[in-house]
Amino acid sequence: MSSVIIVGGGIVGCAVALELTQAGWQVTLIERDCLGSGATAAGMGHIVVMDEGEAQLKLTLFGQQLWQALTADHPQPHEYHACGTLWVATDTEEWDLVAEKAAVYQQYQIACEILDAAALYAHEPALREGLVGGLLVPNDSVVYPPKSAVYLWQQAEKHGATLVYGEVTTIQTNYVQLNDGRQLSADAIVVANGQRCIDLLPELPIRAKRGQLVITERYPALIKHQLVELSYIKNAHASSGDSVAFNLQPRPNGQLLIGSSRQFDRTDRQIDQLLLSQMLRKAIDYVPALADVRCLRTWTGVRAASPDGLPLIGQHPERAGLWLNVGHEGLGITTALSSARLLADQMLQRQSQLEIQPYLPRSLQQEQPQ
Image (cartoon, one colour):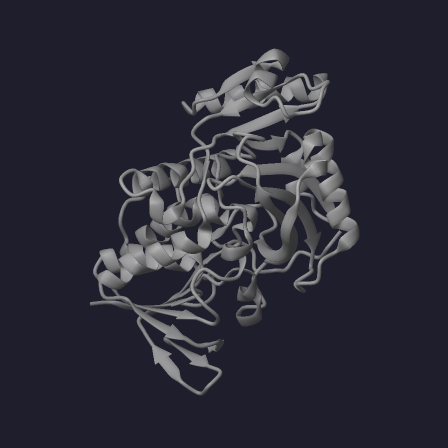
């Protein structure tokens, strides 16, 4: 039986643990804090098909399909909510993007519906006046990521996986060193600890992108779908600077999750009040009724971003026996299951459903900020 150590007990690490235990590997998962913490606990939990390039679309679509299979019979452990996504167009330029986006989705047989202004307001009457339409993607959904991470771990544990709490300080060929002096060895090591991967492997081309989120009291009748502005992708994948984008998500319990923001190379947890106010003003601009809601909590999280927006999934180019599953940026919930499957396919030398090449670890030279 082959053995593996997985560094990082977020949703990606837990998904890898389940894949490999199901394949018969002896799995040890190491977590510094608690399962499902870090970026997993800080994120919005959306499971969305994103179309910025074919590789991203295929990985997110595969991820969505795996999530649908996982939650089909037992949605409750994940707080799975099939709310769909409604991409909102503010002007004729963005209206043209709706048609382009729909054409791409239809090419891959992804269900979507173009909404003119009247249909848009029929679906979401709380949106401000003057919008021109949108694109409804009904199969998008959300989960509560910390609960999903724990669920995946519990399934792995049933197959014999072991959980160790501790902080990995050094990775060698077939063992890891913990900060309390313990050494754990295995045939293979998987690094899946998000932005913290660069503490262990500074050669990786990963940058921190900090974000802030707000959650409100319960307003179950305000919106039905996850609402996203069409310029979200441009803001999400900017190469420098601070940015905000409109992203409003209904939780199954009636609360609203308001996002989103991005700041490069920030890993602290301090709230940026100026950026937060910009984010909230943008949200209120799209949904004016948000000006009267009560916010319960604001927090920050740190995404791990790769230069081209695709995660690194595969063997470290320069170190035998060391495998990577990092760099998911804001899509780590969507791609947790699909990336774990692709990594396990490589480690087990089995055929993959997707072409592996676009996701293999690439140049190890850190790209400098622009």
